[in-house]
Length: 107
Length: 114
Image 1: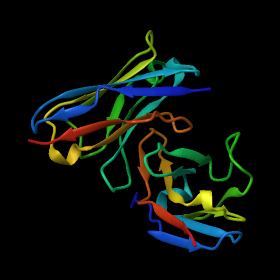
Image 2 (image 1 turned 120 degrees about the vertical axis):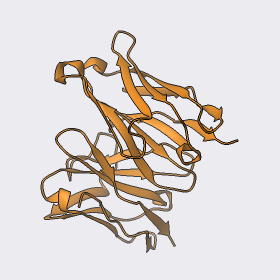
Image 3 (image 1 turned 90 degrees about the vertical axis):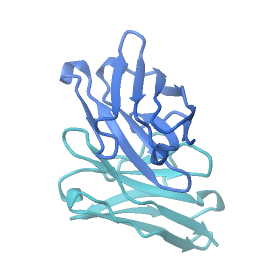
Image 4 (image 1 turned 90 degrees about the horizontal axis):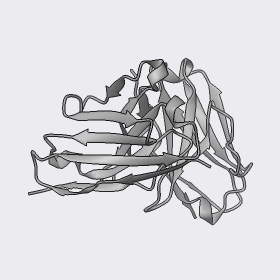
């Protein structure tokens, strides 16, 4: 299937590490992208091509990939990291698919 | 720095039409593949469709829920992307974003209601 599956929610205490997974058959062949979205704001790209970080994105955000699962890792989580996180992939013809999103709560 | 600004949203009755625009700047617009993404109230991101650059044949592709009702086009001379939405349904109510992935507009709100 071409769907991407994320956990609906993840909770972490400040200073700890948050890990958000995204799984789907397509990820074995295609790159993953990660976005952060805060309430009433547009999404912001955090990671592209599985593990690359756009300029301006803090180093505490990192991405990794293994088979059909990709992971977004946020080290030393801060209160401002509380947001929704979406994974996304695309086939060679530019057809995109998003995961359902993960709400990160900073306790 | 890439910038994208959507406009054209509003309130429309079921069965009606609306045309969204997205004015872009700060990147090579004519070479870009451009997408529309929407987000219904309280829901996640949903890809609507994309248009390739003219050098890559300029064709558009659509998600199943909008295929046959929505049309994406582009005017490279004005660096503007369009989304023509016809036969709108209440399920089309959402914030609509234009994006090239690394850059997103602020979104424009479309409400379909009688």
